[in-house]
Every structure is written in C-alpha cells, then in structure tokens.
Length: 221
Image (cartoon, rainbow, N blue to C red):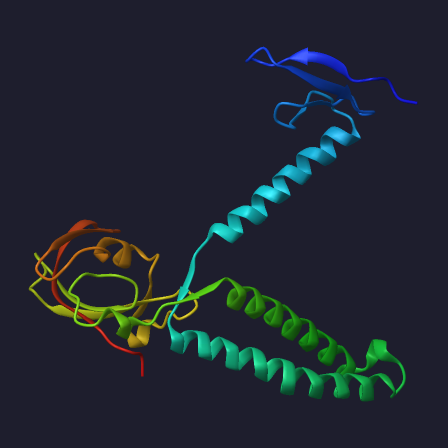
C-alpha cells in the first residue's frame, strides 16, 4: 500500500495533494506539472509534454487550399492507392519469388519505390486531413487582398513594370504560373491591402515599395 498523499497549499491557500513518483518527480495537484526528479518518470513526462505540444502546434497550422488544389492532391492520392501501389506490390512479390533477394535488382528497386510511395501517401493523407478549402470565386468583386486573390502590382521605383500573381496554398506553388504561397514574403506584404495601396516588401536588396494595381478573384483553370 502506498503512502497517503501529502497535503500542501497552493498560492491561493487551497489545500492540494502531492505524491512523489518513483523517479523523484512530484506531481502538483494544482496544475499537473512534473517538478524536479531526473528519474525515468520525469524524463518520460517531459518527452510526453513535448510530443503533445508538437501535435497541438501541427494542428494549429492552417492549410488553406483552393478547390482545384485539393482536387489535384486527392487525385494523386487515389492514383497511388488504387493503381501504382497495388501494381508495384505485385512486381515486388514476383521478384521475391525469383530467388536471392540480396542481388535481385527488381526486388530491391521495387521495395525502395514502395517506401517512397508509402511516404507520399502518408504526406498526402495528412495534408488533405488538415486542408481548409477556400474558393477564390466566393469573394466576388472584392478589391481586398485575401487568400485566392489574383493581384497585379508594380514596384514604385522599378520602372512601373507590372507583375501578376495568385495567392494559393503551400501545396499549390507554381512559379511558372505565378502561383505563390500565402505564407511567402510577397503574399504577406499584400494581404489585407486593396487597389491603390502601397505595401513594403522585404527583398535581399532591401525594402521595396510595391503598389497594388488590380485585385480580382477567379477560379483556377
């Protein structure tokens, strides 16, 4: 039978229970934190708190994505699960039946490729679970820059050459098409601005002023 808890008082004068663990860590009834104790329990509790904090942090990260971007990720995941992986499993099984696996190129390559596919499936599954789909077209004729906006801007001191980008999700970035992530420096400089506003953009050459020429919302092709 263990020792009864020792009665203590917290900062507000209330009586709380405290019991020392086998590793020397004391659990304070007021907040459930582990104090002191370099023993195994204290170490495990510390790692557990760090892991919980890490999971919580990941869950708090927004994964905004357009409907078209979501559809592309979903299509890739479906293809990997229903077509590529099953076919590769058959190849690996056939190669494994041919004898010595240590010198079997088909088997070794197949296993390597299978690991790559499984990692991609895991990544896509997580991204889709965290996805928050935002349709740019739902903004209508607004001239305020938010996620999904297509923005035309010009450098104030750069010859007034105009450039056009669309602010999309981190999984949709395509510089050739002018699709930039909503967490990129240019997007952060433009967000919540409107037509005619001047924003400050931090660049390797120093801060640059850019003027918003046009804002529109349209569905991606």
